[in-house]
Image (cartoon, rainbow, N blue to C red; front, side, top):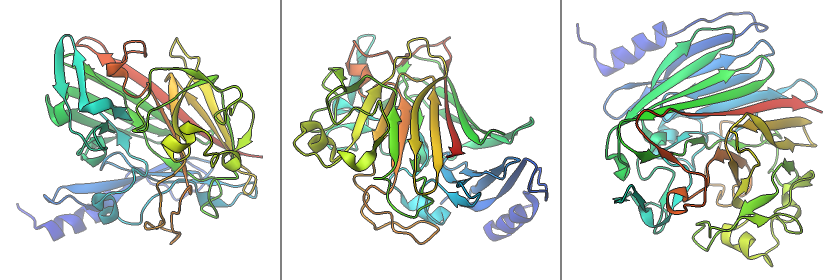
Length: 377
């Protein structure tokens, strides 16, 4: 039997509730219709709720973290990530409000790299450089979603990237699992395999605002447990140097307001990034899950602790937000209204032999974990 697109939409909307419970103090996972791709394929939204009432909403389009709601010090639940109201808004494009980024997060200089003696040319979409997987990266793909059974609500997304997509070699099989833990932490597990040597740097590009969309993030207190960062050239490609943060505007080893030094244009790196848009280097050679950052918002009392197996994090402070996009709360996302903590390997690693390798070969399994844990003070 064949159904029209409208009939299919209505049937799916009526029949796609999974594992739903009416009790607010118990974990739950609910699937609903979010929209349709231009070719008619249905797009779903998955609501994960833990027993404390924390809520995460994730779509299988691009793996976007559509919404994350956490309590403030009074127990009031507010959104703490930037997002747009409808699927049509996501399809039209956003400044990467929470998607899976791949194959390669951040920049590759000139859209070119050489691997095993062969040079590969990638899609160029950021001046002369390749950024966040190219013109049609993982954030624009429809992933296959499945519910993960267990005590905590979890969704697994799967995508197979064909050989040559955006210029990358190898057929890449990727799974990303979002788990909403009982301790008010959102855990993201990445796994990938390839049939040819390739390069890979997966991350999530969520913008956080712990005030609950009440103001920008300049008063957020940030701690980065990193002794060095990667300076960049004017096109934001790392120079290859690892520079100590001591004595610079990049020293967040002690809690410091993000806005305290963000406009210090006497620093060339601040000028290059139009604020903070740089990679901080962790001392994490073994790839263990370790704490890398803490964010605290004095207004709401919310805290965010970052744990990761990755060797670095890209801090981006929403320098190019301009107020043209609004969230579900009808709040304009003005400059520096959100901050990103993109756990990853170093930008442009395929062209920097002294950087930790991002090469993945057949028979190897790429694994990475990042945890965003929320609390209050």
